[in-house]
Image (cartoon, rainbow, N blue to C red; front, side):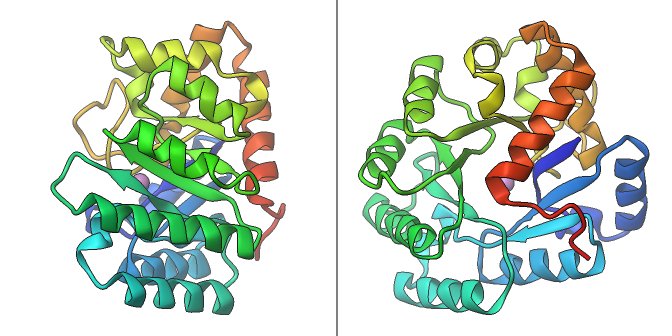
Length: 255
Ligand code: NI
């Protein structure tokens, strides 16, 4: 399995990251995307990936960073892209859940779409309560590609993102008993467009809902989707691994 989205630099892992990584390996997780989302965490995500070769670093500016100077964020990000081997731009996107100026969010997001095209990198998209605006911005740029991370929108919108060529990544919420929409989305996403993730330390799947999430739990996501789609779990594992490797151009051995 590949966990296509985790934040292992988070302080929740300060005391036992070695064990977390060992448990991931023991549960057949062989690669983890180390996803940054700010000036500070882009550095942390990269540094961790230098220490653990199963981690593949990304860098981006989360919409909540739009409270800061946008120009400065973007200059910092482009410098980072130029000077580091990274595998995606993100996470970036739009988040209307919190009160952050929407215009500034859109500028920050759109500029990262342009950077992704300029450096031919996939995008990791965060979208919360902003699915229509997210779609409209991505649609403007036919050359951009990537993944809708921990996708939480409707199946109708999922089809539209699939039309743009985007992958759909599902995480912990697909395992929640009352999660009708993510389960519907899982049922309609074509196998060759599906990724799995944890978003560790957030959004732990059943039966660990509410606890700290970690990459080894990605197996619960895989299990649930294999039931929903009625696809053999080993086959689904192979397919989602291949999808992730293809999207992010992951080498077999990074070290
Ligand atoms: Ni995340």
